[in-house]
Length: 168
Image (cartoon, rainbow, N blue to C red; front, side):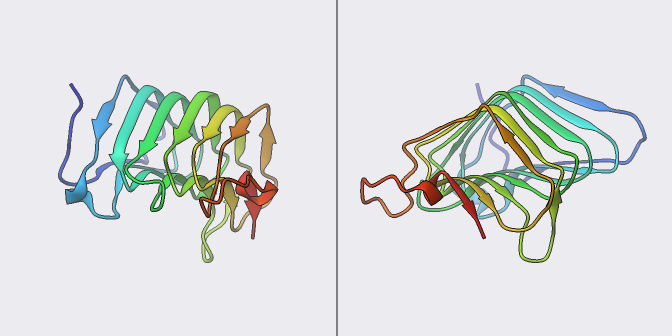
């Protein structure tokens, strides 16, 4: 069964050693509000593998350096609200059977005040979101071999290019 925390789960890795999280199965719910279900941050590498995050408005927030997410599924609570994965900081990698669906934004890189630089998104599935990838602020980001389909931000059944990848 899935773990359902009332507060965000958070890991701040500043140990100088890599941390690997594997097999995490968690569900959000209304008690989290707009807080992220899982918050990974720090200066040392954190790897999330073989995991599932569901029923959350904002499922995964990554900040700092060197996070890697692979073979992980994210399913948001409501396609009209929230972000599957918010990526802030440098040198993050999302890919290798990553899947985000039912989110307003599948993956968001940067915010108006914080960069997301050197982010690689590869071999991922981003479908049935409002927008698959939203690039707000950052440089040297790389997208390769992703399957992006059925993303419809305004629910008009017209799948425009910027509903796949939106660069602001």
